Amino acid sequence: SVSACRSSCLASCSLNKIPHSLHQEPTLYTVKAVLILDNDGERLYAKYYDETYPTVKEQKAFEKNIFNKTHRTDSEIALLEGLTVVYKSNIDLYFYVIGSSHENELMLMSVLNCLFDSLSQMLRKNVERRALLENMEGLFLAVDEIVDGGVILESDPQQVVYRVALRGDDVPLTEQTVSQVLQSAKEQIKWSLLR
Image (cartoon, rainbow, N blue to C red; front, side, top):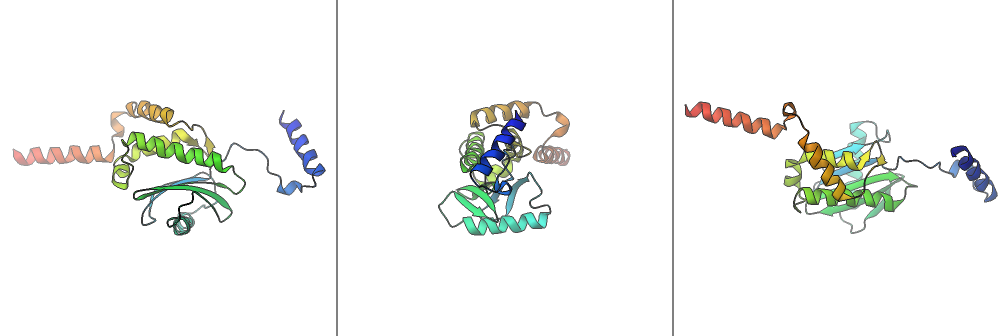
């Protein structure tokens, strides 16, 4: 039970002379944010799951800092502002998954790889800025399938792609994408001009 585990953890901390204040309770909330930036460091997608950066101004400042620290390096992990950041770049996109400083980097990397591999399948291996902007709806659905409220739900890209395809089929006609509405309007204008 949880209380037995807590008692065991407290006893272990006191036996090993670890201050209880440094001991972290286990939690399912592992992801603090998922970001995708372009090669200029501009936000294409950002989803924050807690109040570490409550305002858009603070979020943009963090994103600028993270981009400046990571865009010229070949490593995959960074510690920045007390957070663990795992990242990957591809052509003109930078993908980031952020967790707390005590978070398991392998768990965060599994989220990052799942997101990248899911998008790669959905975009037919064409993971670049233009293709991503044309398929933002799929990106939103994929991230929602992988992480919900900071809790990792899925790390298998095949399952994510399958579920996104299912959810995409369920979108009612009233929720057409902006591009579909614009294309429809262009067609109507074209036909009205040709009459």
